[in-house]
Length: 381
Image 1 (cartoon, one colour):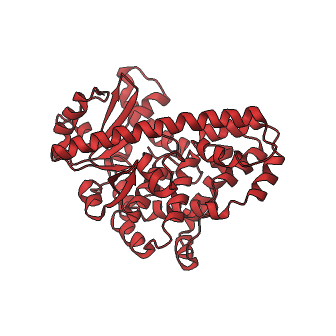
Image 2 (cartoon, helix red, strand yellow; image 1 turned 45 degrees about the vertical axis):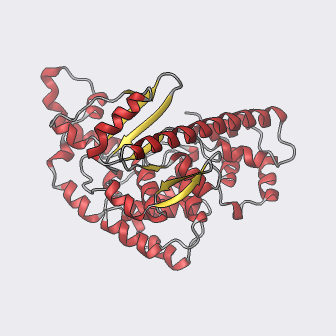
Image 3 (cartoon, helix red, strand yellow; image 1 turned 180 degrees about the vertical axis):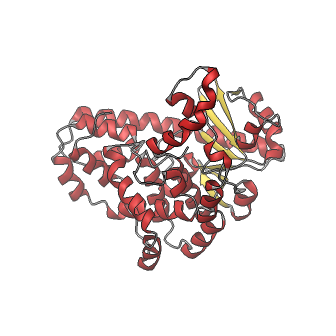
């Protein structure tokens, strides 16, 4: 993948800073030095931050007309998807409510409306809903009635794989709408053993306005933990995930940081929280200095934050070096110990098989290959 021009990187960093830190004069000065506007558009598209780019470019002088028109077209297309996602989400929530099913939307347009202040300012993806496992069958039936098809293998059969499977993926052929039902939120599988389901998120829920309607939303602390977990799970390979944390912190000046740290430690996400918050700080997020120093006290996460802050735009997907694989480093202390002494850490999976193709008769060799594969790609997965 071609590296982005450094001026393009500077501009993308500038447009994703908190609104209070984005000065038109400073951004205009950076934009004036951009020569490869294709890099700017491609980088914004790759990292799902095109809506934020257009918001800034629309007010800048001397932006090439073709660049501005392309950014505008992308923005309008995304805005349409955001509105259709919001409409569909409201229909599904009403149908679930009628059936007595509690459901919590997360990320997507609800996060955009609450943290960004505008549901069109975040790239529209799929619809994510957290439900209780006991409601899965009824919820699936409702979605099938709405024209969705289940595109995920059903592993609810008592098999070992089913124990590590926490989502159903639905797609609607008529319009391409994608919706995922989840009954548990996970950092790593199968080694992360915390019950982060609806019973964790629902009691502290808040209500937000979406397209004129009231919908349930994660409280700020739960939302922060979920965003830091999600970004850490995917090794912060998209700048949008950092922007999400930045915008959430900016939108919640009264965030209860002490509770966030206690809750993160309780559910094994203290290192993910530190990593996500430190990455947001590198991107301009503001927080009380005593809180920042507490996060910086984790030297390993401080180093990881510096690595991802440097590489996310220039070299997305890069994995940090070191003797301990990344996906062990981000686990809490108890989970790391549990992982190190768990036979499952050396259980071969599809990534090992994809790394080296062996005939079936030689598959036992994957047990020898896996440790070297983990050390090579630094993932620990």
